[in-house]
Structure formats: C-alpha cells, structure tokens
Amino acid sequence: MTGDVGCWSNYGEIKKVMETISPIFGFLMISAGIILTFFGKRFYSQMFSFLMFFLATAVIFGALYNFLINKNSPAYVIWAFLVMSIISGFFAAKLSFNFAQLHMAKIVASAAGLAIGF
Image (cartoon, rainbow, N blue to C red; front, top):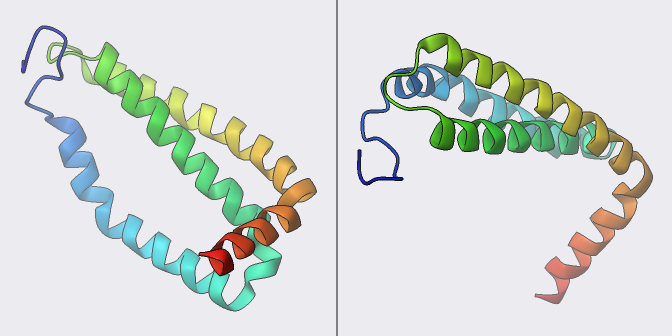
C-alpha cells in the first residue's frame, strides 16, 4: 500500500490486460480517425456514442478498481466490475446516441466556432 487509503502498488492482472489490449486499442483509434476523416458527417453520432461508451466504462471501472479492490480480491471480482462497467458504458452510449441525434449539428457548430475563435 502507498498509504492507508491509497492505491496498492502491485497492479498485477490489470497491467497484463492493458498490455495485451494496447496494440488493439491503437488500431481502433486510428481506424476511427480514418473513418471520421473520410466519412465524418455520417458517423458523428456513432463516434460520439463510442467515445461516451469508452469514457463511461473507463471512469466507472477505474473508480471501482481503485476504491473497492484490494490485493486480496479474487479475479472474479475484477471481472464482475468490468462487466458492470461495460453494461453501464452501453447505457451511456445509448443515451449519448439519442442526444447526438438531436443536437450534433449544434455541438459541431459550437466546436468549430471555438476553434475559429481561438
């Protein structure tokens, strides 16, 4: 432990998982960038939903992992938290897709205005 309430220093399995998926994650992000570059307008809502899915999953799993897992926790607890995080991510993606369908033109216009303004 790094302190009474700090994260424990041996990350073990999560480090192995992240090292395993890191090449795939890079490929996915590059592919998403290429798709948006050439076919952008048709995929705004889907890409926005994908990013919200990834963000929600990462934040929820990170919080659960840091606050509720200790070094004596069995592996099934980590997998259960990951599954709960992914389910929450799908829920966030669905909500963000509906939001993007209604408001994406406004979001893109405001982002372009900010980019031009700065």
